[in-house]
Image (tube, rainbow, N blue to C red; front, top):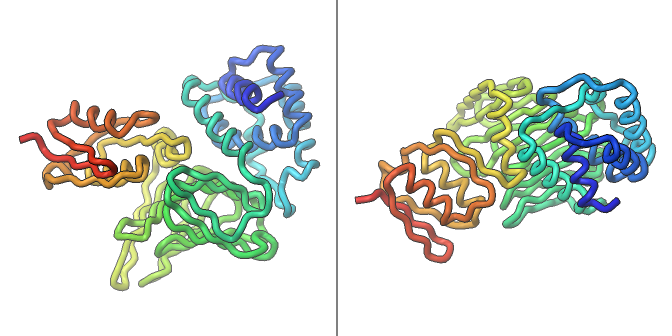
Length: 341
């Protein structure tokens, strides 16, 4: 079975629209191909947290048999780390998802980045240019890098030590290891994890470092000024700021649908809700590789809401123009926005 057909069946399986014949083909593909089996099990933590219906036990037993077969084919990577027990518990329920179009897009994005990624040993530095990059570290940890982001990690990663330095934004799906925690250094904070999934934004300028936790738990420690530590829980977001010997942590609870916005960039989707134009402009610059100048101070503070997927920068500007009276010009890579006189 080729990759395109497998991804279509995978999308139908998660959405609950797959028929019996296609399900048998899907089961054979997962059981007979270690890469497909690994992809299926990796996607479950992202898509299995929605509303569910109770499946037949025999069907779930077959799923676990397939995953165990994949594990025997070096599913867990170079080092012997097991997945969190909550993953097995989560597989006791199958997903019944209403937003099939969103699901299909997520499956295709994660599937293609996974199946086309290089399985060979990585260098100690991975950088993303004008496109997002997905990679697998030596211990099996998966990392998605946003545009113009860089990670650096120690040699023999996962053998005796797991340390990553981040510049920019990244989404981490960390392989569990009780013995060797993973530490992410991002700006003025250290994030210690043993096995979890979370998003980190750290662009090294005056912007604060932000951590959004999807599952598991992480310990965040401020490394500059007065040291402070916070233990994050799932569906929580931390914003770290501080200077001149001070450190400030702000933690807020997020609804699952809001949390999805934090990782929307992994599918090249930009979601914003009542966001100031000056902040939105920074995100648009990263998405489209342009420089945006806002000539009106009042306009910088105006708030906008929306979702951007495949629209061009001109289409986005036209949509903003409908929401609020403004003008714009695009000159090569320079975008100038001003209030309508």
